[in-house]
Image (cartoon, rainbow, N blue to C red; front, side, top):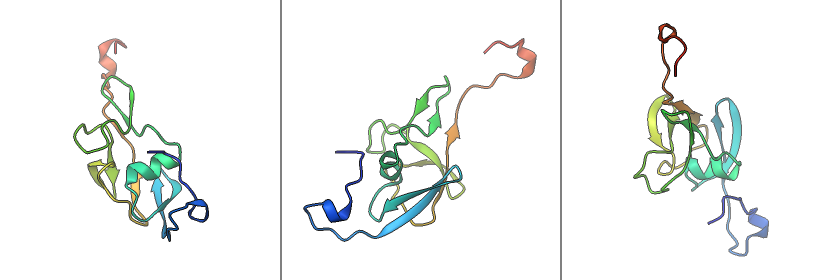
Length: 110
C-alpha cells in the first residue's frame, strides 16, 4: 500500500474519482470518496496527528482499528479512529493530545 495518491488519469484501473475535502486543524486537505480519514491525511504527508501521554507523536499504527493510535476529534466527537472512519466531504478533524501536563506548582518537573 502506498500513502501517495495516484491521479485517476494515470491509474491503469480506469477509476472514476469523486473528490472531497476535509479540514484538519484549519487546513483544507483534498481526498477521494472511499478513502478513510487516515488515508486522506497520509496522502497529504501527515503521518502524526495525536500526541501520546509521553509527548511522542502518533498516527496510524495497526491500520485496522485495534490500537487507537490514530484517534482524533471528528466533527466535534473525540476519540474517533481515523483508520476506520470513511472520509466525508466537509469533515472537520482536530488533532488530540494526551500529553501529561503538570500544574505550575510542581516546580517545573515534567
